[in-house]
Length: 91
Image 1 (tube, rainbow, N blue to C red):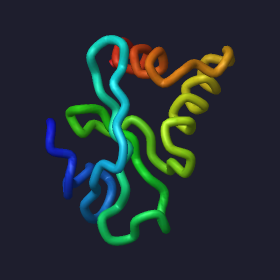
Image 2 (cartoon, rainbow, N blue to C red; image 1 turned 30 degrees about the horizontal axis):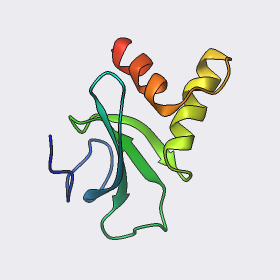
Image 3 (spheres, helix red, strand yellow; image 1 turned 120 degrees about the vertical axis):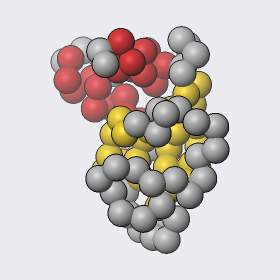
């Protein structure tokens, strides 16, 4: 999915639009989504290029995603590229 504007995400009301993206080392892309009506007043979401939800309740951008994965593995906090690779491999 290349157009990440005004999309619906399962389990979340309203529409969401990408405010940032980050490519991964294995060819995937993460998107940081903001709610189209409430903007920065509500937490963001992080999705992959297929608009599949990877993390909700995001207040600190891609750093929240790296922290969430690091907490699952009890290891050093990885960068977002290695983090995304681990998520994609476990699907």
